[in-house]
Length: 450
Ligand code: UDX
Image: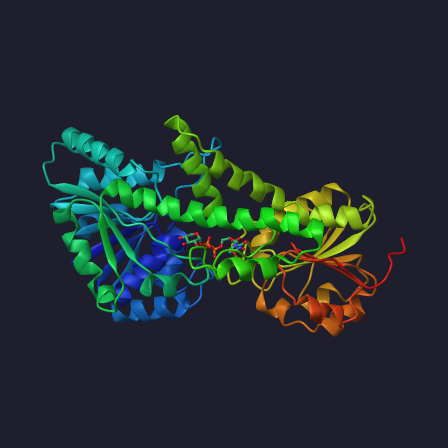
């Protein structure tokens, strides 16, 4: 049996490589010819832990191959996994055009009874739409092969996607019992490891995926809102988080205060869910608050800098450590760093930027800016005199950076830590003069002289 996977982005590529590592024959198609050529040469186009090694290994096994010819993948495939992108449209809706295009092509070109599996994150009801357009396409081309449509959403985190695929908390299968049987067989190696497989209706699976992401995003916005209150009273959000998390009804995860969530999923999926609710005339106040609190939280760094320098940022040189939306990825989509950079440039500041892996991607986005200096290392970024250091992403190398060295380099410049990388007690004994962190008391060991 051949599994065709459409889309060699984060979800498609990780799924294709992992399905192959489970012993299946996989053909992964993408319309980006350059990407396919690189992949067939064993070059991994994304920064993702374990993926480059596993990709090479699976290509060598002969089970995995890539093609830029969608028709070929349709002809060869017995089961078709759609993993194309679903970016946000300007009104927040998910753009399903790529998903629909592939589904129509499969309907028109398959020469056998088959199964379409949606792996892309799609709004509830999309499976019904796919089924309707599949039937419509079949009518047009006079094809009467039996095509079922099922949902199999993923819960992969960037940076640990391979691990998450092969060690999932659960596998979600949505569709008719009969249609899901081949998928159950495909995932049997993971079920044998004790991973639960949940069967439900297609609509439930689609909505479960969005709900999981919206819930996680909501927890982050919740703790960020509380952190604003904590700051006003000199309370410590870390203590509050521990106290809350010990209640098993709440749990400790995804309550890390910071400068907001980014990435390719939470912002986009929450917006799409808001749109779905609105279309149905259902109140979406909680989802909207999640989003607006997050937008506000991305301004936290600029607020602190403006406050520290009495709104005079024009002549300041600010170093920023961390550009990716979270550590262990080079992804900058909806990254908080970009909001900070834009605000600081607008205020007339000069910037020194450093990220362990996201600099090439950042340079592409910020190519036109003349006020940016790119650094070779974290140390390099603070070598020349700076007015402030901002931490926007909690990379391990920042967390492990010597606070004594930092204190010496910063002199009287404040450290604005948007990810709470350091223990307050360690900062207090390091000689750092001003330390701002999210939802925790300000450490101020020297009066500011402006
Ligand atoms: C997320 C989901 O975790 C995953 O299940 C889904 O399939 C895709 O979306 P990802 O976007 O890779 O994965 O990142 P994740 O690790 O969940 O973090 C998302 C954002 O939330 C990051 O910007 C991170 O910094 C932020 N975050 C996370 C917090 O601010 N606080 C937390 O406690 C956790």
